[in-house]
Image 1 (tube, rainbow, N blue to C red):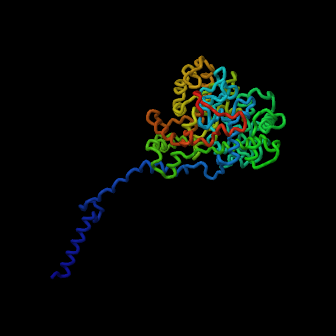
Image 2: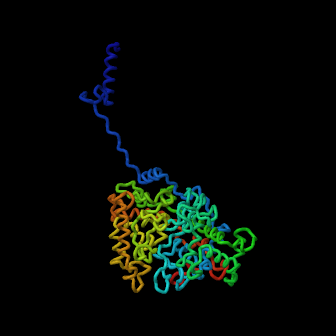
Image 3: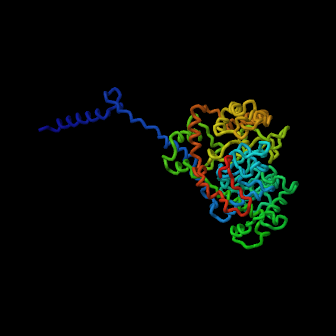
Length: 519
């Protein structure tokens, strides 16, 4: 039997042993002979999905740019009337051009051309590649922007933002305040635009007044108001326009859309024409993209390469591009006007000493600081809405590389100033000498953006170590995830394209491609 002294000695020995086994003892494992604890296991790096989702949270993205907006359905009566008007050549002065001649849903909401062929086409029903005038040249100086998702803009429309919300309220598409147009001074709402009009309805008033776009040779020297009144009379079959359309069922369509039986003079006004066209265009919402599905939680919606591209796009990799400086938010645009230095070719907009330059936003403001600034378009549905830039002479690959290798990209697309590499002009017998000021005008625009870079390098052409050889592919893979598959599916687009049997008169544009196949 152990006495108390022996028991205490045993207890002390056991405690010393336990402390040694745990690395204890004085000095925390110094010279006392204790064993150091094993290092903690390494923390695994975050998965690719975790990185992208952290970035999504930091940017406050939801994937859905329509949240909180009031947008019409294509099935609503006004949108249905607007569809018929959008496809009617009766709204053009010479009855040879419809809105859809340059903005067809089957062509990404544009026309697939570098520069539009508006009035005077050899075949008025041929839309897209192959549409041409007798001289083989376009007669409109800026590329047709897509009408897809146009109801999501809150600031301004047109390349030079000449139809502009005075209040720019978020989520309102211009309905929250007055709208400035070319008919009113800068920053002053146009009193001709009805209160509460959307930007889209206001924009719809103007192509019909431009000879190259829709007016043609009709009513030379007339004011915009006179043109609008005369076209309304033609559609409504009253006043000076009575009898111009031998087959005219428009009044019935207007009465159904507006649920009204008032006389044509009161119902078929250009304000109501623009309203209906605006509602049709605002119904063209195509945002169900793979990226949206990914942001909303489906990790399988996009590829790992696209996920890496997203991190590059948003600047969350090193190098990173921070493309969202301009293409920000769920709508992928800041809606500002920016100098980007894209090539200037084509007939231009009357600017510069030779008249074939385009000063962009400066045309509206009169301020030279705005020279060569153009509106930042959304990147949604980008792969379906080419070609690219305000003159439409770049492929998607060109447009991307332009930001990093602008001079090399320009020389590759326009060797010695030739337009023979641009599909619209490649078969023209004079493609090598068309628009001879292409090099001079484009060099001036590029010099302007390089000067801007010296003032604020963050704005354009960031030198962040981006390698086109290794980094371009994931970025383009990401951009492809921003396209709603419906925009490339003719059956899915069918609700926005009228059948021949729907025509209220004999001037519906039942468009065909260069092979004669229906669009």
